[in-house]
Each structure stands twice: as structure tokens, then as C-alpha cells.
Amino acid sequence: MGFSLKFHCCLMSVMVLLPTLCYAQDYVKSRATYYGSPDCLGTPRGACGYGEFGRTVNDANVAGVSYRLYKNGTGCGTCYQVRCTNPQLCTDNGANIVVTDYGEGDNTDFILSPRAYSRMAQSDKAAELFAYGVVEVEYQRIPCRYGGYKMQFKVHEHSKYPNYLAIVILYQAGQTEILAADVWQADCNEWIGMRRAYGAVFDTTYPPSGAVTLRFQVQGRAGVYWVQASNVIPSDWKAGVAYESDIELE
Image 1: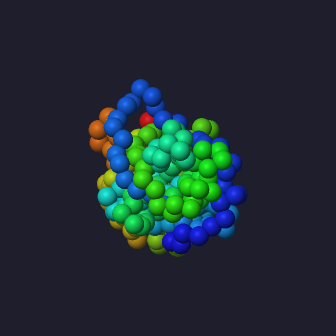
Image 2 (image 1 turned 180 degrees about the vertical axis):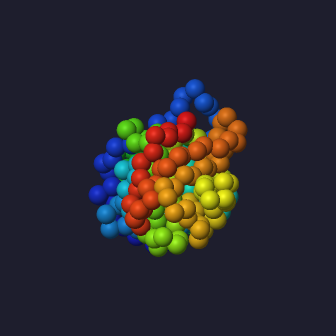
Image 3 (image 1 turned 60 degrees about the vertical axis):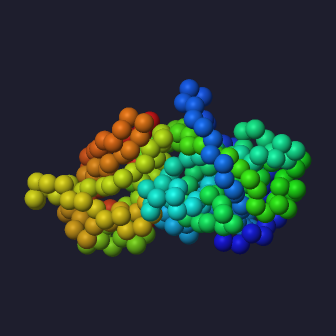
């Protein structure tokens, strides 16, 4: 990731993530930087495997995070409030971001999109903040909120019908992490574990012949539990298509 950009296009955005005030936790001190982008958005090539979704989700307030937050892909789709600590340049609210990538800089936990980095600055201080390159920050986990969107299961572009199915979960709401995914094999009458190929992408070389029923293991504030999505992907699934469910995590 490069660190050069024009900052002036990054000052306007609308957030879809809101901190939940009733769930307080301590901030963690760290450092953050930003990556270059000609349009101030995220990157479609992030390590989580989100593609174009990772470029634009949350109005492009996204970030690559260090390995301890990336967690070998389990950290993909999690949300954080990140705020810089220089009171002359920074706001109290900072930026609320979605993790879409892995990346480490100069002892940083966050490599922010230009839009997210600019949101940490006071309205007339963005240029000065960009000039620093790397800044001291503090951060905390927050629930992800996607008004109007329920969880979607995207058939990854590398899937090959009917012998290879890879899926990525989009709009993972709440303060949650996806630990594992299984696919139901009706012929065997059992759940078959999917492989975490990388990031947020799970795959199988034995997709069922009919509609696809999935379940995924969630870790959240309520503990660890399974959520089932019955027939969420049609039997004639197509690579690159996202299929909406009725699921909304909290």
C-alpha cells in the first residue's frame, strides 16, 4: 500500500456505523496511517476477499488492519471506532470503519482508506493530518450497523458451477465474528465443513446439487452459536452474484 494521495476529495461522507452508547469499553492506544487511492475509496483487492463491496461499503470508510486484529480472516467485517489523539487536529468522534483488508505499516494497527483517515480530522485540518502520514490513535470495537441491509451470501467470482463453490458473507452486522461455515449435504444427511480459503472466503469442492443451505458459527456478545441460512443460494447459482437472506446479526 502506498501513502500518497490528494486529500481534498475525501472530506465528505455519510457514515452507516454508529457506536452503541450502552456498551462502553476502554479505548486501546495504537497508531494509524492511510493508503493512496485516486478516488479516496477502499480497495477491491483487499485480503478479506470482498471485492467491490470492500471498496465502497460504509461509504468507503474502511481499513486494513494488523494481524492481531485481522485474526487470519476472522476479523474481516468487524467494525471499529478509530480517533486520533492530537486535540489541535482531531475530532472526538474520529472514524467508524469496517475491516476489509490486512496491512501493517510503521507499528500501526490501522491502514485507513483516505476517506476514513480524513474523517478523523477537524473540518479545516485534514491537510495537516495527511502531512503527518502516521498518527497516534485510540480505538474500540463497535457494532456494525447497515440500515436497510440484511446479510448477503455472495458467490465468489472464482467459483465454478457446479463443482467449486466459494462464498463470502456480506453485511455482517452487530459486534460479531464469523468463525466457521458448513454446507448441508442432503445426500449424506450431514453438515460438511467448508474451508476458510482466505480472509472472509469459505469454499467447498463438493457443493450440493440443489439449493444451498449454509450454517455459520458466530462469536458475539451472546457467546458462540450457529446461525442457519436455509436454501439461501439457489441450485443454479452464478459466480459474482450476492443472494440476500433474512438474517440480521445483533
